[in-house]
Image (cartoon, rainbow, N blue to C red; front, side):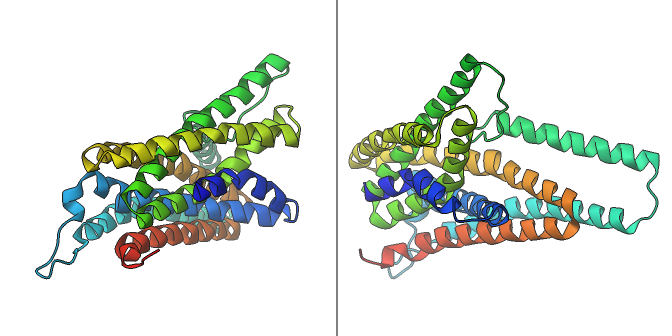
Length: 309
């Protein structure tokens, strides 16, 4: 319950910290946390949730009876495949930007091609935002009814999302302490930028800051309900809890790769439009966050059970 409360207080803590940060530093912190969220959620899915949904993978032991953790090596290759193609995409963007800056000729065809590429990227980014729970790019129309609809959409969407998070955390703590800590850290890394974005949307829809925080906290109550249900599922035994782990693993993959990674792509492309150096710096921050999240999840999966809490 302590970890659920800490996660639910992300928005309040974030708003308090934001007041002391400049806009540039705030953007850097959010960029870092988005990368951390992608690494933590994808690592949590590959290293913890999906293996727990297939207990035979985790229970392999050597001749001395010690767990071999051989499944972690295969998880490495899966995550390397994801990050490799992500980096290839970004490096190609940077190389094209370098060629663009070094060239003195700006032909009409090149300009039209660049405009087409940018518009296509923007369209794909908008589409990714539109289908995700973590939609932070909502445009508001005049009129109280439209504003209220957007606000309620955010509140109810967050409530459902927090409910699933609670089930994941509860089932993980029922499995083991280190598993619960791993899932909680992954959710915490993802929730920080997510909750800040949701509060910003609610404020932009016409609410004052106090109302936005209140509704945000109300939607977080479902996390406690999900936690209680998750603990109950975990107590029923591995034959039942493995379905909760499989469901949570799929959800974490969708949020990290389907929602947050397009956010990283969009942020990097916007930075490239400012300057090549800015784009490279954003990619660096994203990579630091991503690898930090992956390392934390791997460390908890490999060595967490060796610590007694």
